[in-house]
Amino acid sequence: MQKTSLFSSPMHSFAFWGGSVAVVAGVLMHVPMFLMARGMHYQLAGMPMTSTMLAGMLLIVAGTVATAYGLLPTRPAKVTILQEIAAPEDAPLNRAHWVQIVLLAAALVIDVMKAATLGFVVPGMRLEYHLTKAAVSLLPLMGLTGTTVGSFLWGWLSDVYGRRATILLAAVMFMATSICGAMPTFGGNLFMCFFMGLGAGGMLPVGYALLAEIMPTRHRGWCLVLVGGIGTVGGYFATSACSALLQPHFGWRILWLINLPISAILIVVSPLLQESARFLQEMGRMEEAWATLSRFGLTLAPAQAGGLDVIPDRVVSGEGSWAEEIPVPRSVNLHNASTGTKQPGLAGMTLALTIAALCWGLVNFGVLLWLPGSLVAEGRSMGAASGLIARSALLAIPTILVAAWLYSVWSTKRLLALSVGMTTLGLVAILLRGNGAVPALANPVIPITLLIVGSSAAISMMLPYTAESYPIRVRGRATGWVAGCSKAGGIMAQLLGVFGLVPAIGHAAGLVAIPSAISMVLILLLGRETHGHDLRELEAPTQAADGGAGDSLTA
Image 1 (cartoon, rainbow, N blue to C red):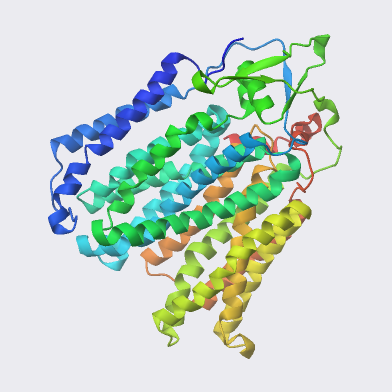
Image 2: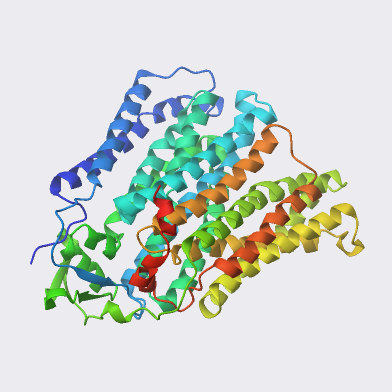
């Protein structure tokens, strides 16, 4: 029996691992400059780029290109015998599922760490480069712009390049841009911060798309929401912990340099990360598709055309020490998968999710960021304002657990609409509080709690809901689009800050509340119900009559 391979050929495997080593070496060639500045508390402002650093940059570029080539899938000639890949809709969770959950949660942590790190490096960067508040705000703007572009780009690539390959290539780029910690100029930091965001932006949408395709129906909902919540909380915890432990001794730059070991670990364990079986089938790599199907309890049904049965009794999965024979489980006919339930088209649902994602970005990167300053302006100390927000934020932790449970037992689109509605209610409460129209809202605890709980629940469900609402041909692009729009809302908010156009907190909340309420109604009217539905229904022939709405995402 032929062994399956993680790459298209031995040459591709050599290119990937050799390129990864070259990227690591290139990053390490920047470390001496960082260590030379320990007498100045690791401040590099004004220092020249050394020839070793320039050579390291060339090595990084060459290594990134090599890894991209190594991950290229082979597109064979059109096959004449087709098999239908059946998702593991009825399978229990096994060891392979939990391994993927851990790995993809780690990828989501990396994505969140990028945005969270910006807040911890800005004070030290502003001090080292003697920047004004407006000038240093360009850093989070560039970072958010990079993650936005990355979400769009990597989501598209995952549909043509492969889920696993896209995650690994994003990790390589994220690792390469850790040299941001050794850039002596502020301009260099802005440039590298954009590309760092570009790399990290691919983790979130592609991770959700891959996880949605490998999880059984009865476990898919709660798992997607819970992994998303763990990724968010874990990312902020990891960033704050690293900052508390390392920044007092090594300065703010160490928070960029630690991207090297974090991403390298993900790449080293990449043989454990499985590709989507359906993508492997489209590439004609049927041996690997069978092995992946068996590992996750998936099933394979031969196409009815010609009555040919080409499914072997046993297949081999893995390579080297990971190789093992796995029996192929009994097959299930995909033609009986669809329930025949009429679902809304993709265009209207995409509009609803786009508006909801933009509003979430405006809330998370706008209203919530401006809230502390507004509370201080009312006469509260920064400590009191921070404590008030922190107490409200604690409710986000049980919110994620409750949302994960409800998502798996109740209507998914109604629960998403409810979380958007709660966010809208919080925005309206802040508006009324700012106008003094409701005396009961003089204490800001109620509006802040509604806003934080609602927005936390919304983002923990929005991307999982997207990932299980679109057919496989556009799933990566759709998830990337919604993730990118959530960052684009943040860019809008940051631009207001850069140009000094931030409105009063009440007015800002009122303006965001209008489209937020519209998106809630659109989700209820145009959203798909995914609870208890088989992902294979999205591939049913009846979905072809969707008017081509989903194809607009391919542009």
